[in-house]
Amino acid sequence: AFWQMVTNIAPIYNIQWPGSFATFMRVLGGIISLDAFKLLPIDCFGRTNHHSGLLLYVVGTAVGIAIGLGYIVDLHYNVSGHRAEAKKELATRGVLVFPNFIYMPVSTKAFQTYPCEEFEDETEMLKVDYSIDCKSDEHAGYAALAGVTTAVFVIGMPIVSLELLRRGKLEKDNGIKTGSLVTTFDALSDAFRPGAYWTQPLLNLQKVTVSG
Image (cartoon, rainbow, N blue to C red):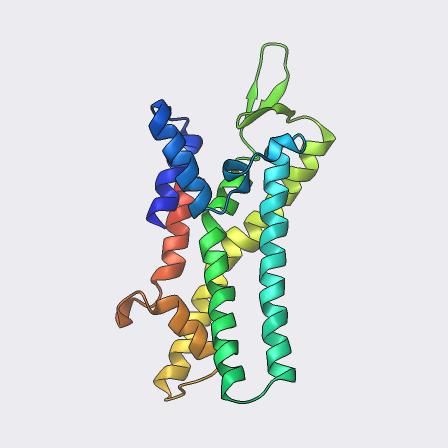
């Protein structure tokens, strides 16, 4: 969480790092945030812009979560035994960790879809990408996508996580040691002391204050 915030400070607040340090931060940010646009020469294969980056993050996040959930459902209905339970627990942890890992870059991409700069000829271009006309119908569609992403993922995920933590805590307090809610509770709270089990959703909201 800390390094994701640090590597996103420059593009969000227009900070100009020295050349070599800027390259280091770009590569580090690409690794930490899974940003293929920073790590791979994608422009060699076709024109990319902020819209394509937003679409990649939204679709990639949805597909990653869907694959994880599909794997868990398949284990639940088609595999049995202790090995299946171990695989299900591992897959559940993966599905929970992945959105938290990708939360910061998705939030940043969504929020950067809105700020525009107006010029003397009354044109409005996207601040993060001057190749995009903010008054175009295409941008209006991507702005709607960013709005849905903000409501469902950026705002919705911390709320859902907090509710899952609450339910998992109740099950553990009642002596239940296995199950999806208990695994969810353990995956989201293992890094914090018992009394601060709710910290992960709070960290996500802290990321929003930086990326927003």
